[in-house]
Figure (tube, rainbow, N blue to C red):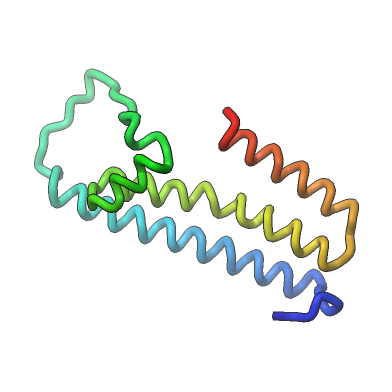
Length: 126
């Protein structure tokens, strides 16, 4: 890693780009794995498009998603992939706070902390 005095825009942008790329690739791999499991187990079942059924409670919270994933349930693994996809830009904002602090840019640290607080409230507080 670079010393904090050498942090400039170029290395920070490269790290953020790699972070976003890795997050999306990881999320896509997890969703693909879950989709494969789901299709192997349920691919030939008929689909009923007349009634909408939302996700059950066990796949609406992290604990339930973790339980479903450990049980190798396809839908739970797909949900886990979507959680990683949502977490990717949040991780980018969190890293930006660190990068702006290393650059000693207090104004951007403050703005980015506000953005991070809004993101966390919208994900956890609602």
